[in-house]
Amino acid sequence: MECGKCHERAVYHRRWEGTFFCKAHFIEAFERRFLKEAKGLVQRGDKVAIGLSGGKDSASLLFLLSNVKERLGIEVVALSIDEGIGGYRPETLKAAEGLCHQLGVPHHVVSYKDEVGLALDELPAKLKTEKINWCSWCGVWRRWLLNRGAKRLGATKLAVGHNLDDEAQSVLMNLMRGDWQHLAPMPQPGNTEGGLVTRIKPFRSVPEKETTLYAVLQGLPFSGAECPHSFDMLRRKVGAMINEVEREHPGTKLQILATSDKVKSLLKAPEGKAPTVCKACGEAAAGDVCRACELKADVSA
Ligand code: SF4
Image (cartoon, rainbow, N blue to C red; front, top):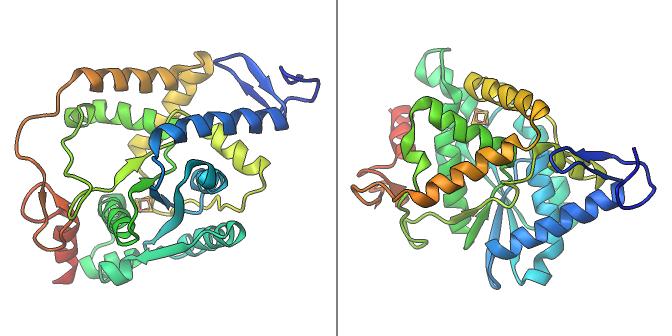
């Protein structure tokens, strides 16, 4: 097929719009939409820490934000988390380091070994069991360290590369788990000591296919390695189900996200105890001690 804007060969078909793009016009449209989105998410003078995993989404995000930083009047730094997962994280960190070097962006790495006291791979020995729900440990520490790391860097925003597929999956998973709290706006502590650095997700309405294609067309160094512990079966099943429906009904993922946003805007934040500050680490917590410090204590004994 031909591009809808010129006579070049199309490299992408945006099915829900029925539009075909050649390489140049895909890049142009992708960047134009990104700039519009980013303008609404950052303010002049912001220091934006980008959670850089070394995968295609965060690579595209870093590349784009770094390219428009002067135009937006922002500072950009990259922040990677080293969980200590052999056969996976070293390769992705190498890709992340390569991209930062190429773009001249400062790159900071925060490790579980330094901050939690052990690498994730050491959990079975510590807990004396092979049956470990890896992501429920790792996900808590990862969110904790991204926020801690961003604050240490003096960041006013924390940008993450979550795409439309991730967001649509999360909405359905929250529904399936009965996790109604995540369907309502959450009360947040301020962006001060103990608070959460404001998270921004410039790709939340961009399909994974597009962030991947953009990274490939721009020749960005990224790693396609998958975490060996990523057997979150519910997310995989939900992702496969949504993809199947999307094939038959293009635009489904966008509709899931739009509906969730609409519901959020109609609901009030749940009443109850306002978030407090963790007595152990000073980060935001639901009780006296945050979940990350509780888990840290479990492996420190
Ligand atoms: Fe950690 Fe799970 Fe992500 Fe692997 S898939 S890095 S274990 S949260």
